Image (spheres, one colour):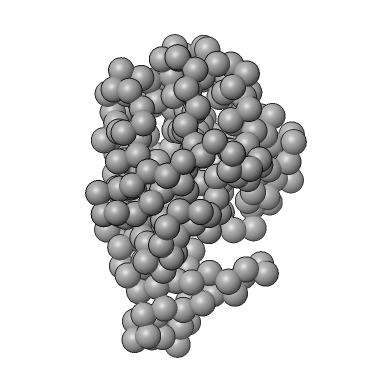
Length: 254
């Protein structure tokens, strides 16, 4: 999938966010949140966009600052900034009377979960894929050596080499992550919440999805474990299961 028909949205802080909004005169808008160092043209947002087009649902996807074709660099961003930019974009591009279904992938679930309460009057469902809220602290900082931690706190940045990629982790990103906790909150919303997690996820352990569901006291919740599924969950069979669940969420619960 290319960036064809995508546009830029300028935030109140003058960041230019690349986005694509597909409107089908539906009362339902599906919003996709991608992961850390990812973008909006991968297999998952592409498959979900095609599904929404087929089912005549509104669809919105975008890229955080420092990601894809959005302005800025990744080292300038953090969870609070990306959450606030997403909030502004959704408020600008989605009608107030539209029902919302959020779909978050990895870190995208963290951003989406941050916004549930803000859009509580509109939100009607959430799908998490390999969800990774609080990953900065629990998957990175706690596993770093004292030497690495000292480098981050003194130099302000550490370049983590993992899986053939380089992840620039800044001091301000780590500290801001601590202000955006999810696991100590209660999500008291009577909405369907479905989480997908691969049993061979090499990045985020299954316990993360289980802990999210523990926060959801009133939701119609379920955890779908994908046998042999990795962190990406981008195989044709994975995408089919995700779209099937989205279909059920839209047409069974509404």
